[in-house]
Structure formats: C-alpha cells, structure tokens
Image 1 (cartoon, rainbow over the protein chains, first blue to last red):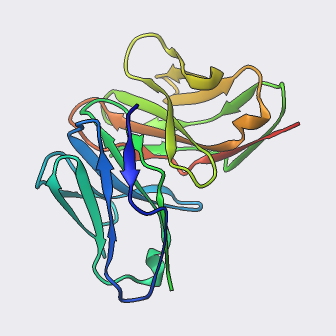
Image 2 (image 1 turned 90 degrees about the vertical axis):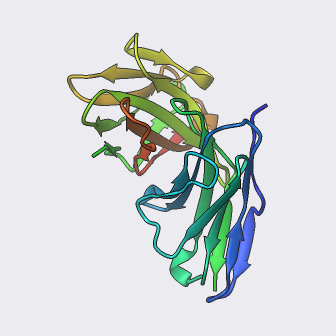
Length: 111
Length: 114
C-alpha cells in the first residue's frame, strides 16, 4: 500500500523557534509538495520539488524553506516560527501526471 | 492561471437522497480534474479523476463526477448519500500541458443527516 508519512501529527512550538516538519514517501515518486490548510482558505501550496535537490516556490513561500536531499524525503522548515504559521501542514507526493497521495497531516500550534 | 471554485461552503442532504457537490474550474488548456475527500484530522484521500475519455467518471465509495467542458464544471455526485459520507470535499485542477502543481478549491463540507 502506498504511503506518505509525516513524522509529527501534533506539535506545539513557541514563537521564534525553528521547526522541522518531515515527510517521507515510499512510492519512488518524483514530485513532492507541502501545502498548508486553513479553514475557509482551502489548501495553499508552500513549496514543491520535482527532483532531488530541486525546489520551487508555491503560492505562499514566505517564512518557509524546504530541503530535499533524498528522493523519498521532503522537509519543511520554519526558520523562526510565528503565530500566523499555526496551521495544518499537508505533505503529498505524485508521479508526473497522476493524483497526489497525502500524508495524515501535521497540526502545528505556535504560541 | 489555473483556478477552482467550489461555490458552496456547506451542503446538507438527507441520508438516502442524491447528493451533488459543485465545482467549476479555469485553465488555459485542457484540464486534469480531481476530487479528494478529507475526514476529520486526516489527510486528503483521492476519490476520482478525469483526464480524458468518457465525461462520466466513477470513483471510490460510489461517487461519480461529470466533466462538462462547455460549462467548465466537474460536479461530484452520488445517487444515495450515507451518513458516513459526511466530510470535507476538495476539487482540484491542473492543465494537461506542463507539470504544474494541482490547484485546490476551498472545499465543501458535506453533512448527511440520518
């Protein structure tokens, strides 16, 4: 069964902390994505990657960075967390033309 | 630019009745269209997709969707709703050309009442 695993389901961090959200997929997919989900706003794309060591900005990259050192792993980094980054973060992967496979999500609260 | 509109934030339907969740889209070329479902505190699950071919697409859990090119719509339907269908539904689109990421609608919350 295909699987996208997000390392933390729930996190609570303080303003200014550095936060790492990890995502691993076991499907040998080329493409990986980070979205954030907020009520009334749907899913908004933060960053995506079509290959190892490659990254592209999505619609809302400010305050975030990413790392893709290996094909199966795509990490989202909040360099200095702020309260407006409290959200549900969703990682997904796909082949080039296929549907996205999502992880279970990481709910981050920044105090 | 690609965009998706889900005009209803909430849809309420009685169990056993047919349901429709609406979606319209905009792409510059031809679309790939998707529906996803999200249950509480879970990630999104794929329901169905339209890429080419028959305009009526059948998917998981008895759902289907009809692609209408002239109306740029891709409404999700089910002939008989179940209480367990209550969830958040997302429509998504991308252009066939290129490899741009999916663009999602804001989601429609479906409540099926027993």
